[in-house]
Image (cartoon, rainbow, N blue to C red):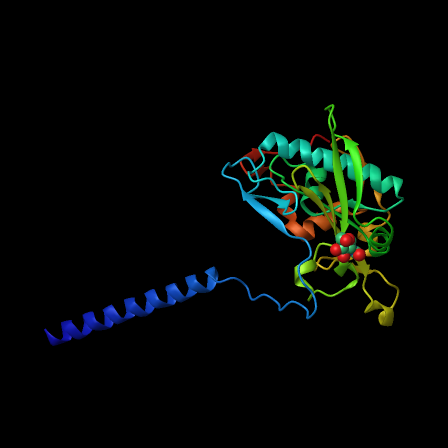
Length: 270
Ligand SMILES: *[C@@H]1O[C@H](CO)[C@@H](O)[C@H](O)[C@H]1NC(C)=O
């Protein structure tokens, strides 16, 4: 009898210890990663209102600049036409202003697969050299540009807004990873622009080849240059020289071969 009771107590304690370990592990997974303290004297410049999507077909969240966001979420059609309008107007303007820029992140992945935005995309990302962001900041900050919306009779007003923190080149400026925005003022949707900097550490060890963004992404100069001229959603754009290498590093090798994403079946038409 005694032996039996002691045995069951040990068994009970083991189960308790096991449950506590699982619980601690679960809580650790749930807690957010430690965030870096913002740099003294900085504040978050760009602010957005997030609309959460309830459908499977769209990305989980659509961001709109707080200054222009509507009080309701945009429908899928409105998001698609807004993104195409942003892209066409941005590409034209940057060409006219003689500014170098190319597709990045998820937008580059869409380009890789089908030369189009992914059907679930709710935003657009581009990069540009730090010297070009500096030029835009000095000469064109807060300039408004008016462009016709593709395939419609209406036109839209776009705002070029450059983050005053663009010249702070530190990963610790965590609230200002985005250096500039091209914003559709009718609904606040935007293109995020991040500047690419040459890594100064290499000044000591050799020729400057390492490049980085404030959001922590790193590249070799020859991954980006020479830029390749291409087409995206029928718009003339530039993409990095080694897009597949960049995408593999950012999203993993399977992002270039896996044909099932977000309830969609993908194929590469070329
Ligand atoms: C751009 O203009 C806005 C509004 O005047 C200002 O808040 C911001 O600091 C400016 N950005 C730069 C880079 O000067």
